[in-house]
Length: 163
Image (cartoon, rainbow, N blue to C red; front, side, top):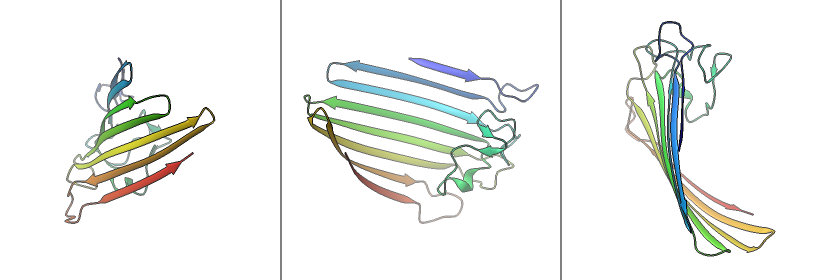
């Protein structure tokens, strides 16, 4: 088990710009389980443009912004929780399952007004017929909440094959 807390870079405030996280892992025999949680608070009071003094900033631009999350750059806070588990059947076969919940929490200065939540579940099956070979097949599904006047919430399916 581990955890961390980073004081914010805003004088006089312990919450603005703070970052904290915690995680735990359990492994016994063929079974493994892990859980993690993190919260990142914007240094800009009430949300808005991500403050340049934020602990997770890159000279004023937010780290990890994609086409999917671009509209939530003005969040007052981001919160992430994830759970993963795995089972090893034998030396050749194992399976892993994951679930994550990501929340973009608005503030008075945010350009969106409803909390946006993305839930993702995934499954990966590995086959290792020899030491040099590791084949995998995976599937994940993401569904967003209905928020900010959007009636047709986002849904994403992804299938992967790897070697």
